Amino acid sequence: MTCKITTHVLDLVQGTPAKHIPAVLEKLDNPDTWKTIGNGTTNDDGRIDNLIGENNSISKGTYRLTFSVSSYFESDGFYSSIPIVFNITDTNRHYHVPLLLSRFGYTTYRGS
Image (cartoon, rainbow, N blue to C red; front, side):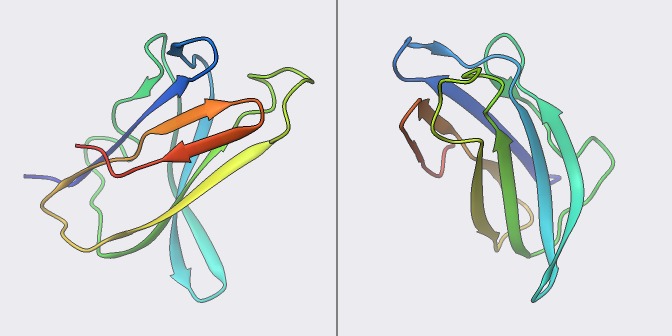
């Protein structure tokens, strides 16, 4: 099994998937440097099915998934971007990192 990183963004106020939100996946390369390893944009169902592509491999380490939400809320949101920092310890697992979003708050969790 290849490690796969996916996400799903839901708009909690509208009760719908959050469409067309760009996201960038980075890996902590050394204590001060993040290296971009993937990116994507949420589809009509609010999902990005594989942030690293089909042939890229993932190693153990610290990752950051940053969502650019300012365009989603136009000029009426509080956040311009939302970074989620997480650790990968088992490279044989699927990592699903959902984001539940509103104009003035958000939450995330380790999905399945």
